[in-house]
Image (cartoon, rainbow, N blue to C red; front, side, top):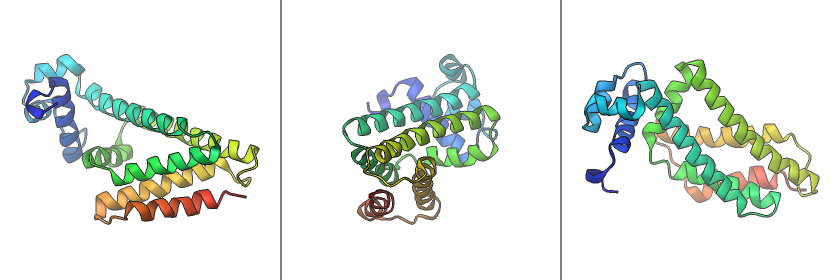
Length: 195
């Protein structure tokens, strides 16, 4: 939908991401977000009831969308090896296609200073993803295609590696070609697990 025809709810969310990335949650106001979106403040409250609800809505919707993409990617694979490669492809795509730099800036900034509710939400979503990757690795150990290494630690290592590369790209502007990153992850995490 062209921006001129963009729904008010979407305009508000897009403006909120920009303002939250610049000023943080605490440093921003509902009025600034409404002004950036080109709507009145009462419309913001109509859709989201509060600045806090808007903030959580942005995260929940983005994380839900990411979860759907992950499930779709691994559902196309029949084996633990295929599923692990699908996760790696998804993670590399996440790195290569980071177009919403502001969203990642908010995550970095707010995960350090936000309320326990937001941190609990991040932790719950991360634990779910780690468990998913760990179960794929455990399945590969069970069927004899992977070495018996600690699935949870391997899952966390994969995610930590990619989050570092994303952070390095966003903060320092250092980009790694997608093909090189895919090769690195496949060598480290797939070949490293293979028997």
